[in-house]
Amino acid sequence: MSPQSPPPLSGRLVVVTGAARGLGTCMVRALVRRGATVALVGLEEAELERVAASFPGRAHHWCADITGEAALTEVAARVQQQLGPPSVVVANAGVAAVGSFLQSDADTWRRVIEVNLIGSSLTARAFLPGLLTTRGYYMQVASLASITAAPMMSAYCASKSGVEAFAHALRAEVAHRGVDVGIAYLSWADTEMINAAVLRELRARLPWPAGKVYRPQAVADRLVRGMERRAPALYAQPWLRAAQVIRAGLPAVVTRWFRDELPRLEHQSDYEDSGLIGKGGRAATR
Image (cartoon, rainbow, N blue to C red; front, top):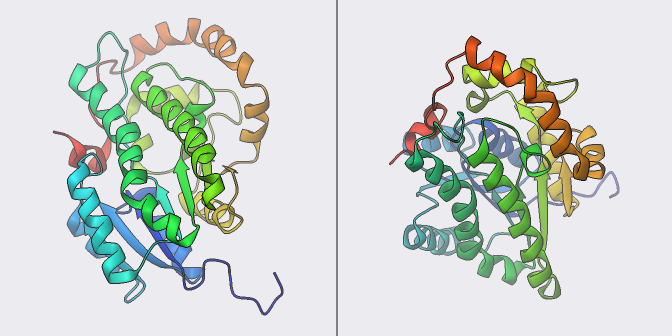
């Protein structure tokens, strides 16, 4: 790209789910800086309106539960009617819960899967027709939890492994139609989702750099640069690329590492099911 060339997303429409707070809001900010128009989709209408108002004329918001197929399909139609077909869709919305599997609430466990995995697939189903028109790019936000599982987060790990597999399969299905699919891998970003007491104690027991917390805007900026390249894999932290290479051996390492750590954690923390974490999680609670 020459110095005179506009950024690749300039003048393009990008849809971001889970845009009311955290990493979603940071991505909206980065996208607007790069010249994009952004359609914000999420559950928290007041927060979505607040974020959109920060970028008048460049950000627009729609309230929808991504696990509701009919509502999400309607939102996709309204976005296209008002703003045109999207060039990029970012499946970012997600929730987390912390606690041992045996002690977890079954409905909470199921809701994590429903939002993170089923919600991502419904996002793709609703917006993919528009991406076919623009020969666009679908970005699925995954996690380090897609690469290796973490104890106390079984639902989150299952959902993020699921969205990774879903995105790989979707990529193979739509490549011949000009649509690219990228998977974003990220470690701990400093949002309210990671601030549960048990998660803080888990991070404190992880070896460097696995326990390091990163600024969410820096993470979002890196992901947006990956969007501009239509990258098949986006690593918010460079060391995650190395983790990808050794992922086959990581489950055994995690098991050995936490065999002694988890009993101590049980005695030092509130070990019960957290419910869905943070304000975003409470908004997604049924």
